[in-house]
Length: 356
Length: 69
Image (cartoon, rainbow over all chains, first blue to last red; front, side):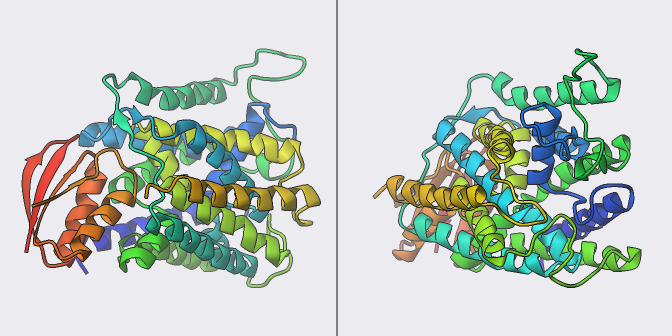
């Protein structure tokens, strides 16, 4: 195995281990990291949805973006770019979030849930693999969202990181604009949103993951995609590392509880666990990267990826305001419809954006 | 020499487009691209198919490589 493969395997192990430690320090169970859940919490913290249990300005997300930005600046890879079907990507981000909230987690949390013994996550994983395979089907038939262009100014690439920096300032300073109603940031008094590791540790954890993921190009949908497409297992090793790293520490901390029932922040409706991550896998493959990879790219100046990130935040607001999001009790009828609609929209886009 | 233009394309399009030309049996291919990620991925693909990779232009935001077999 060459050096780069050892490096991405080590990256996975570190990320998995950090995730377990963050849970130990206060993050919700099996949720050391979850890009979708944390962006959903951020949507709540900004008052974009009114689900009182899931509101927190997650420093991990801010850290990942800033970590990727700093790393790419030092590596000379930071470059503002965009213009590849930006609004289509925004809408795809909305549906990627809806899929993730039907399952209750992004692909990264899926791995962490599996490492915590949650069998429902295995069902989701199978759905994810099938979704990626469907995306590959479209890619092989010439699906392409178009070329992006380098911008003559790097300013656009800094907008998303600066927005997150302002959110971090609000969080650290505890800024209050409206003493009666709260805001600019809202915080959960109970539920997953009220569970978090100390701010500084979460931020540093995010920075470390942003650095490692930027260097290794870690991507969970990419891992499965590259293996199906060209039998390349490089990115898949990162996936494996996260699983092993989290599994070892979960067992050590006593977090590992195998089974389907009573898993934390999860439901047992297998069809929707499968279809939720199927939608995420399909959308991520068409977008060229999973939710984590979109965050990293947006830190590198990719304005199309920034549109996906904000699409996901808006998607979280829709998901909770319109009752699409699942709860531990399961997925409601509106969530089921939204998930099916999302899959149909991706099929339509998959066919429509063929080049030849 | 066959030319493949992967400038501004997101993953995994650069690899797919190059692979198509490789699979057609071309012995000499010129690939032009922009991102470092696509450079790494196309290089990896070409080497795994037994091509020699010669960098013609190697800048942070633009590169050109010749693949020879």
